[in-house]
Image 1 (cartoon, rainbow over the protein chains, first blue to last red):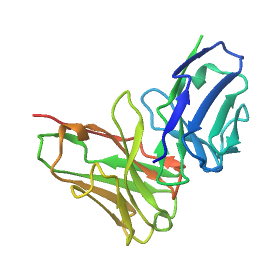
Image 2: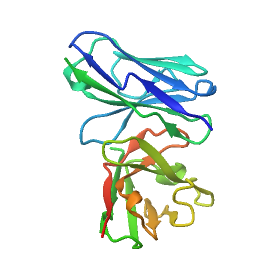
Image 3: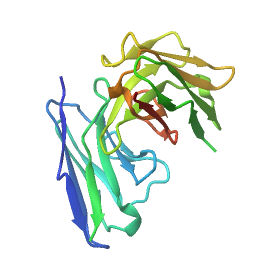
Length: 106
Length: 116
C-alpha cells in the first residue's frame, strides 16, 4: 500500500519569495502525480498533472518536478492569493492524496 | 462553463440515509469517469467511489463498501451517491470530481453531518 507524505506541514513565505513544497511516495508512482490547491472555503483546484504539466489556466509561477518517489511543487514568486493548502495525489494506483502543506503569507 | 453542483447533504442520525446528487453542465458528461471524494473539515481528501463513463463499472473505498452506491444518469447529466447505514465517521464535505485518474473539475461540495 502506497503512503503519501508531504513536507513541510506548514510553510510561511514572504510575498515575492519562492515556495518549495515536497511530496514523497513510499513506492514509485512514476510520473503519475498531481498537485491541487485548496483555498479556504473552496474546493480543490487542479494545478499540475503528470508531475510537471500545468493545468489549463494555471499561472506560470507554479511548476512541478520529480518522478518515482520524490516530487516538488515550486511557486516561483509567491502572491497573496496563493494562501492555501496544497495537496499532492498519486494516480499510479487508486487515487491517494497526501496530507497537504499549508502555505501562509509572511 | 464547466460546472459541477452537488446537493442533498444535511444532518442525519446514525443509521440513516442520504442521497447526494451532482449536476454537471458545460461538458459532455457521458464521456467522463466521475468520482466522489470526501473531506473531513481540517483534514485531507479521500476518494470514496468512482464510476466509469458508461455507468457499468464502479469501485468503492473499503470504508464505504456495502453501504454506499454510486450511480449516474447520463441523460440527466447527473451523478448520484446513495448513502445508507450512515456512521458518525461519515461526516464530511462530499465533492464530486471529474476525471479518470486525476481530477480537473470539482463541485463546491455538500456537507453531510451524521449525529444524534
